[in-house]
Image: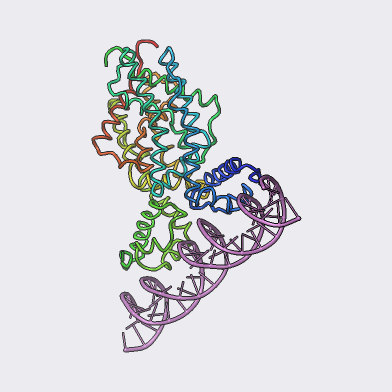
Length: 208
Length: 208
DNA sequence: GACCTCCGGTAATGGACGTTACCATTGACA
DNA sequence: TGTCAATGGTAACGTCCATTACCGGAGGTC
């Protein structure tokens, strides 16, 4: 509760962001009070207003910095493996882990209701996350198609279907607070099953 | 703005629910004020407190009545067609239409952030909607498996994958306010593509 | 040690909101 | 026409909250 007393401003800033994220993710934007954040982070409200200007600025900082931290791994990752099945499995596991991470679940929860208030934030969250992942996967599928491994005509659409399969009902249930995030075993089983169906679905077969 | 002046109580109740739903879905629960609802519905705050007790009661009424109205079609529908492809296509179209309906989008938006405040409401929303749809589809797949049409071992899991494919990124984008709901043509194309991949994915093929 | 900047604690300010109370009006009914 | 319950409009009450101001201490610099 007195975490923010640490001397350097960078440390205090980090502690404020951390505490604020927890409260925002739990309560939502409108229901979160500055007092509640300070109660968790220690220090004085002056710090928040000096560092972030106001409540909106604090919220924006949380969303952008968490987005950068968590979602940046989606674009640059080395996902090209020898086998398309391996590639899809690795990609699916990583994608599911990101979707289930507390930061993404928290941001998603608020983004959904505050889309009107912060359209710019929501847009960049989506573009750095789901949109980039889908694009990246579409490129992989495109390459596989050119190699003749799959016969899908619209790789972008197929990529969207795959990420939908990965989210499954799991994402919905976790976001609605109906169940905890899956264990590693559950996650791997879900991904394996999705890859199996998807791969059979797009692989050249004996005619239609 | 004076819609609620109509004489019969049932009519006024309906007008209040309608107006309140609009405001709640636009602004979220915490940011919605009783004054804003009355401004849209006409009449006096007394009506709300007489009819629903308080703000929570009004919100609960909105969620349950809209859930009943929209989601009830998911369970009882006659979806068994001659062909599994036809069945999946019809089911997918219906499911996508429900997911994209303003009522479900609105409830979903609020349910996500108010899951802590109204766990019971959120649970019943999920069970009447996505859970029921998935169960229904699982039964259909089970029947197909027994007929030898498909070779999926875990039909329940496969059903989850299918509804995930149907939601695709479309649901995400609409919920985040990044695009309007799809036209009928878009919806049908998305469903057709999902059915194509899913059906190939679960159909018996020439060995693995 | 004097000075100054930064910070924590607390309170003040101004507004919004849920909920209740009051009053004048209305519309149905006898 | 007289009576009564319901209703619309408005204001009151108590609370909560974002934001700002004020005060006193701490720690560094000359």
